[in-house]
Amino acid sequence: MIGQPKYIDPTTDYGFKRIFGSEVNKDLLIAFLNDLFRGRKKIKELVYNKNEHVGVTEETGAVIFDLTCTADNGEKFIIEVQRSDQKNIKRRMLYYGSKLIADQAPKGRRREWDYAISEVYVIVLMDGFMMSDGDTSDFLHDICLCNRDTGKVFYEYLGFIYVEPRRALSFH
Image (cartoon, rainbow, N blue to C red; front, side, top):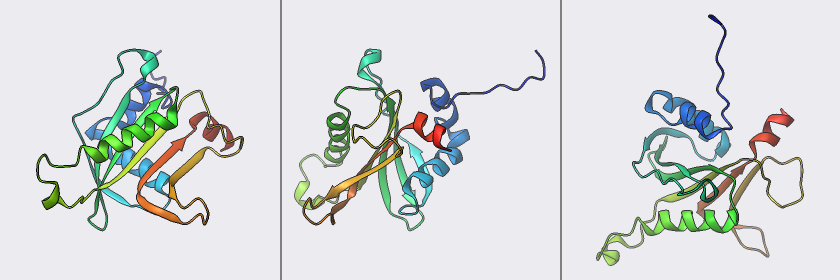
């Protein structure tokens, strides 16, 4: 029918890439990511890196975006956005975050580099599965490295944000 609006479901791979995956809609992705950081970071610019990794099969998942972000204070950090249902999700995301850190090391000049690691955040839009923490009301899980005994943040420059879209949509 002519004149009938078209809708894109942002919880599908196609919909998410269509809405957030292009320079034309970069402002939408920046706004979405800034909301996820809840004031801790304020992204003013981002660059889509050219290393999208697509899984070989549907079961292996796909890395949707690898982004280099510039905050309003000039600091640069890396974000990987992943949207998939995967086994061993925590281990896989730790691997992806570690790989983003390791890839920053210059070959043969580590002493000069002095481990000047950019911040790394892995953002996971979970599709059809939930975190196993038992809490049914939380849809946003903001994870960092902390001291187990005190709860104080040990290292704030590596973070994981897990979003459960179906739960988020049902509670708003």
